[in-house]
Length: 334
Image (cartoon, rainbow, N blue to C red; front, top):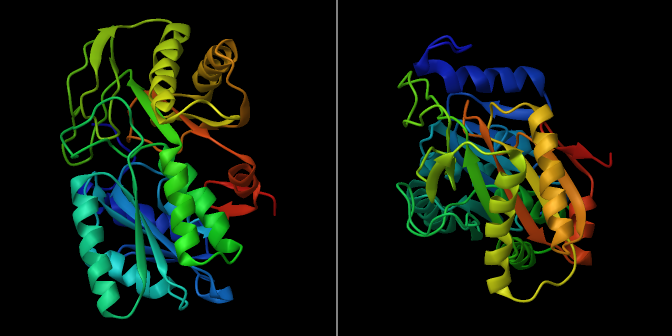
């Protein structure tokens, strides 16, 4: 195992200490595992809290800041945070306007955020929860009942965060977040397995020359395994799967937001090349792209591969997407 770490036992704590050193605008509680924007209670805005297992960086702690999340709760690698973390985060960001929990659809996350919401409400903190379940590859997996939450989490956190920053009430912020999730679909591809620090070896077997279509962000199996193919063919499959599922929501109406996301070990040279193929497929199918984001945002440790996320975006969603954001991993407009 070759990893730039001290030990598997301290990898998350060490990363949080590094985050704190690099971003003094964040209040990072290393021991209790909560990351909070220092001005979270200012302005009387709705608080946004998300979280999940570590290993998907910059999701979620990298998205804490102006125009996005108020707080994030990092668990151990690929392990859900616990309700105490979520409850502590809710209390830290509640300004009296309520708190929105953004929850990826993984069983541990769902159960623990539900418990935290109940405990918060006992403390007179109003809580709404939004479930992100955008992955079209499989219906059920090792970690979920129903579809997995993947790349659309970024869209939900950015757009709902912008609505909260503008002073929208809790019910409206939650409704906006649900609308983004309902309008988004994702499909992932793995070219290699990921390696968790605790295991020290690949989490699944993917022979040389093969790829996994529809992979999950924890290395869960996808739809099928095939021999390696050119980027143009992978793009046809991934975009085709996403558009086919979006078509079930209703007829296409307007442009899309497009995220070409790296899984952690794929360089930008490859990601931009892959995006050229994604753009080609979308253009050939008559789908206009309003905004594009390319890079590593919702990762799976050192997995090579990528995912494609598309979100149908009307003028209101585009306006909120364009609103200023300043976080460790996403920033524009300020």
